[in-house]
Length: 192
Image (cartoon, rainbow, N blue to C red; front, top):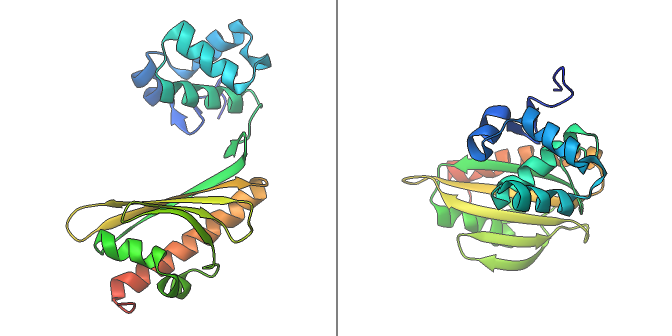
């Protein structure tokens, strides 16, 4: 949502308070600094480098400020990256980490809750992560697993290299439904 001065009160998914707490400046200040420097004509890497070298912004926050600025100035759409679009999802499930991981890693169990279960796992780290080439052969899926206390765990995923914003919305609904099926199946114990 743009303010009177043409800057965002919330940009790149980050609130003004959060960016101020981590960088010492709010969105209005960053937009003014970057506009004055000519960043509207720069590429992503050039803006990141400027923030790091000229303003000492920490690496992760250089990315966040740059993305917020690019979105605020119409240079980048929400969920857009240099490689296309991306969408994320997560779900906390009342099962131990090993059971949640197995529901993804075991093709038979995966087929019970995921309609497109035949993806290609490029790299698997037991109970931690899966790096996947999706069934379309073009997009990637990064799946991370973490414990959330006694008998609980969480799966977080990022589906990237999507074609457009329509694919983001389609896959947002797809993953919401799939993760609900996963949660329901695991928590009822029907897949053991």
